[in-house]
Length: 257
Ligand code: HEC
Image (cartoon, rainbow, N blue to C red; front, side):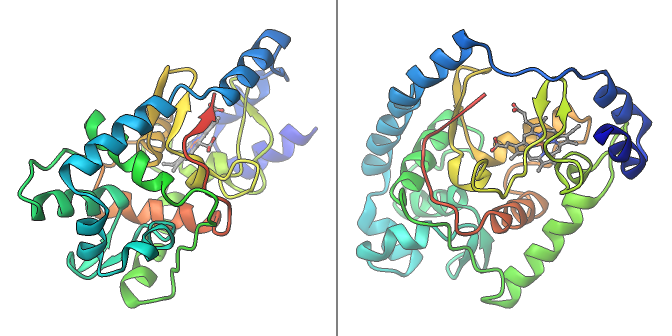
């Protein structure tokens, strides 16, 4: 029924086959109990606490605020607006990239974007904006305007062996249907709120995963070449997807399947 219209919209026989083979399935009682338990006691809270120690040892709020050109008091609302143009960088950067800049400025070793250290540190810093709404502004300057256009292009571009784009699975006409028993999520909807709930503890990986890394995992699953973290394309994608969920409340660490 609903699936047929999805297939005509998709033009992708490979994906159609997968979707049609799906059976509706919901979490069983044991899964639900485990999820509730983890909500109470998110295992990623430990990573966030380690991130706090790392951040305070390597950078500290004062030096970080100074690098961003804001007061310590304004740090949370500034953090709630990433990716953003950072003057000292001369371009739009992610929160993690801004932490690399601050570490370099402090004469400290610069953690790699994919390192565990960086995931913990950026998770902690993002959590400083908890309970605020994401306030990304894609019209505030020319650089942000360009990045959101590039990000939309990347989201919709069909790539890889199956000719899929992010939009093949995350467009308004397909979200809510199921792929390999997983509901296709509306990334911007308050119930998913991707940009404001990652870093999240991913139960299927027993680890805390950052937002950009989560997007890379979708690329891998859908056979799209993985865009490198920190590349202009990856940052643009983060701008675009974050803007879809602008106004959702930041709650780090999230808890996801
Ligand atoms: C073949 C279908 C498919 C494609 C293509 C795809 N995704 Fe996904 N995506 C999914 C499914 C299914 C889930 C939910 C998985 C789950 O529940 O664990 C998901 C989840 C996500 C999430 C996490 C949502 C949350 O819980 O907050 C993000 C972010 C995401 N995708 C981004 C992307 C981006 C960016 C692209 C393009 C580079 C992309 N996806 C391409 C199927 C896809």
